[in-house]
Image (cartoon, rainbow, N blue to C red; front, side, top):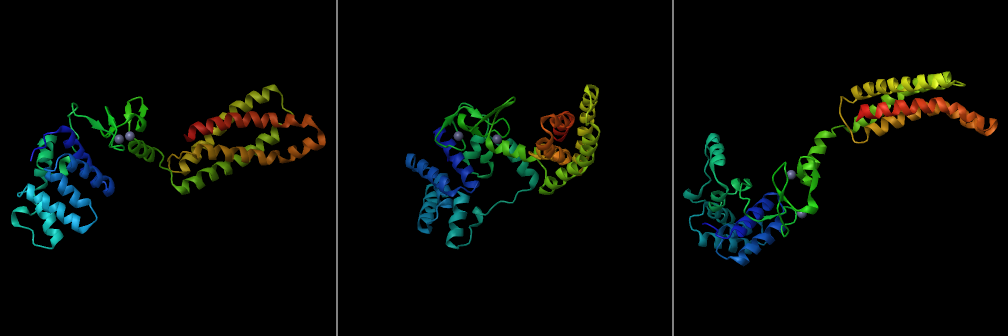
Length: 300
Ligand SMILES: [Zn+2]
Ligand SMILES: [Zn+2]
């Protein structure tokens, strides 16, 4: 049966999607809304019958769907299954060849998909830009935006603007999961490698920069950058090249730790020898600044 009202057609499609996603309560509410506006929509009765929990109501809804549309295989099938009766031959699920299915989905227009009541093709959110769209997370909010990645309609408060267009929260999570693929073990191994390499490097720096002059500080700056990249290469290889949101921070923290432990005696010396000892921190500080920056950008 053809649903004339485009808004109801869209509502039905969204209800089916929500039901497919397993959100029964939300889907039930939407099917009821459709039925309230038009009691003749067999697909809505079928949908309601599939999501409602109460068995009496389930049967009543499925009966209504069959009554409205006697040759509605999905409804007949659902009702027979509920009653434990054999499924009539005409209503049995067709098992078309896979090639045929692909062709069907490609050829089928979204409009005919709805009119045949076929649940499988409902996801074909198509080229009906003239229809009113509703945010897939807020079915009551009308919107003109779609996620550029998956095409779902989204409202302004759900979107995130990216250089390529608006994107929905689901797709952002998906993309982040692909981008940040580090395992828990990586979070141990990466920083550990960084610490093991930073300890000798830090020792050398602290040992040889005491009382250094201006020239030494310049050299330290360049050496720091090289050491940072070097530690980054090893740490990155140790975690199999994977990325973690906080891996750069942690490896840099280990670099600082690996250098700072050698400075502990000097921290004590400040109390004894006075502020002139602070000079001892200048070389290591320059080294850490350069090495930390290089390491961080390498691990990103
Ligand atoms: Zn999306
Ligand atoms: Zn929304």
